[in-house]
Length: 139
Image (tube, rainbow, N blue to C red; front, side):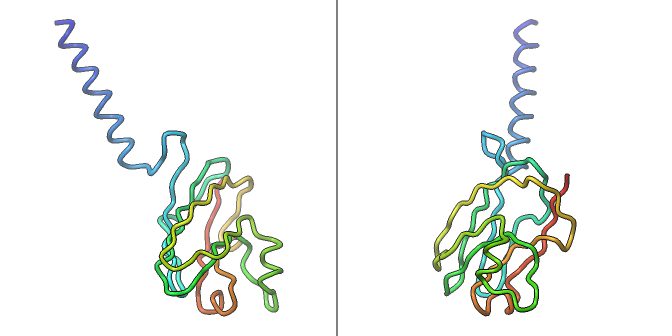
């Protein structure tokens, strides 16, 4: 009877851990993986709402025909250049070549309500072509 009880407990624990690993995208160290596909003038992120203090690994996949960059920054203002944008960005991963995948690890330190941060490519013409996506960072 004791063996049956132990076996049942083991099966319950095993099935619970399999269910958790299947629905989180988290690595063994607690980092949440976020896949962001970028193409010519678009981002397709797995998610756009994040938590302060949580570790994220952005898996950047360029499926486009030209190089792109991945920046997390405030939305662009009129007349702002790529250099200006880089100065206020939280992340700036440049020169992601067509067909390349690049990983960037990041932890948000501050909350950012809707309209205050976005994913973007600030290469000339890319932002203007629609290559930006608004994100939210919750406390």
